[in-house]
Length: 308
Image (cartoon, rainbow, N blue to C red):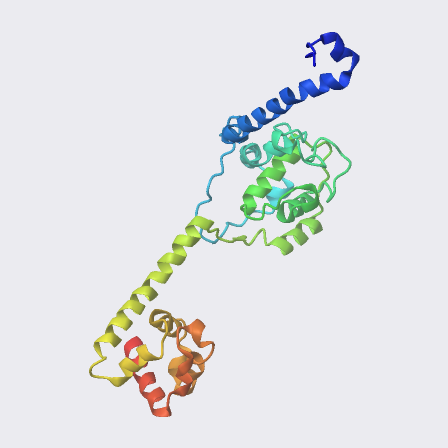
């Protein structure tokens, strides 16, 4: 049989032959790409984006420990007739505390208020005030805040500081700021004790709170160690000492349970009630319920002597 010669024209006349001829090439290419993917999977899946740099403009400062205190009382006449010294003080406080939202000119265009909806109060406007424009109404806003509007409460500030801020705002930004009647000022004083001083609660930041708790627990921890050491020394001379270790699954927790409550020292019954209530959580073994009355009495005497 005569061997047929390869002809392009013959392939074009019968496309099936063209597909059959290209199939091995296509299959080889697919397999090759597959091997490339498998051997470079780590590189392909690796994130090529550069890590985002931390925003150094956002600085979260830790609060300091503040003792609770009673601020000095204010003269109620300063509400109706503020002094220039109070206005100046209010200006400094406004710039520090309020301008980030309300803007330096009190127009509600501060950088921190851009994302708020509704926008921070524009003090130049005479309408739309949620709580009113009188002094006692504005003071209520500072005291309680307006949660729905994103306005926080400033009840942590001293009374004289809040009064100074309001007087600065009313004198500098507000148009035709309405005056309070003597009765309204008296009622405000009764509500918030402005003329008697205002009690401000202390603040303990989370980090400091952890340190304080740790410091408070140190004396009890040392007492626990000392008590266990003393009971251990009595093992050979006092059977109740060995009994304590026999009926405690966690001797440190058992001693700490006793240190956290002095009520058990009143009587053997109180002692029994404490150590048999949720025994595992208290550090004692459930087997404690099998003690005889005499064993319980001797154990009570031992622990009371050691922990006094």
